[in-house]
Length: 425
Ligand code: IMP
Image 1 (cartoon, rainbow, N blue to C red):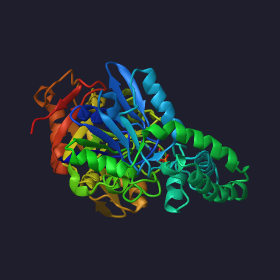
Image 2: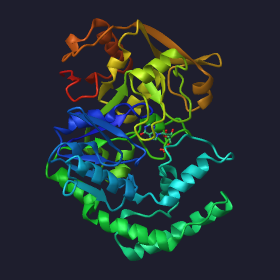
Image 3: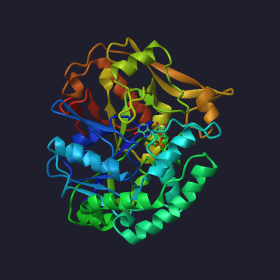
Image 4: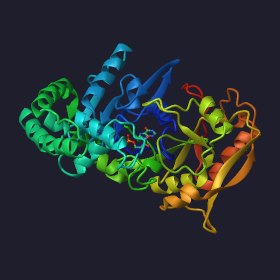
């Protein structure tokens, strides 16, 4: 009855979509528990590329059930479009996709406020995805959010929108000098969206506990990454949810003891999109090479991702927070052809060496990374086992395992399902 959780260990974009898709074949139920349509999980099936923002990646396996649990913030228009796009590709969600009635709803005003805050010279620019994520979670915590349960009940939708928009309109007008939104029109629009979504809505807590009690194998799909977690990430340059495994309990209503195994997804190098500290960033031709070779452009926004060496200080921190049992190492092939590789094992700052990931952003922004240099390799070919990888690649993996104290179980050498090595226990 133990569940598996797949979580990002860096700043997101680790390749979780592919790993979840790979593991979903052995699951019955796949669950998103935090984040929203800021996520872009890319899965390639038989050469066809799918980018999923809200629907769990497991939907691409026939017969699997998927839940968008209460910790996710749901933009109904985006979700309905994603369902339609999947349908156009022959993937039917009805009867297999479920949405928790406790999930919060992203409203148009949340996207307006996200953009207004990003474009305002007096507020901190974070480089958000502009999907309204921060303002929606903000309203949830400030107790003026709108839940899916409200969407499908006209009376409570009216009350929830009055509560929300009365305040939000004042902010739009007085802080940002923008016109207010019409509450009546938003009500009509969201009532319709609620109607279209109503077939998918369930009591997520009962639904998921029922699945677990029935012995179904559950796979939790983390979005973003631990270093973007609102509590443990590089605050304030983070997203607004608990993107580590810590979001799972509050995001689903499932007690932590149900999680039997945590798989931490780590890219063989590091990327970050948006603002914020990134100690191992390469601002030179090598960074550009990784960006090109790794197609490092945002799946949601198309923005170029910042690229750099693997940071084992950050990774060790993520392993601790998530209780990572096994690592899934992705995009190892992107490092092909580099004669040497560097991995960061500490930061030097203010006459001190930091071996643990600090809360103080100055260390991350101004500190000098301390690197170990390892030999590179030419080609990984189409290796199917660890033994078929070149010795230098195996040494790179062994170095990571030793540094983290956690075995690498999955190695991804490309986007296709077949380009994956599972290392036996
Ligand atoms: P937000 O989640 O849109 O509010 O953005 C906050 C920060 O998280 C920004 O730096 C975004 O670029 C980053 N972010 C949000 N979602 C993702 C993701 O799925 N992958 C990578 N970065 C993300």
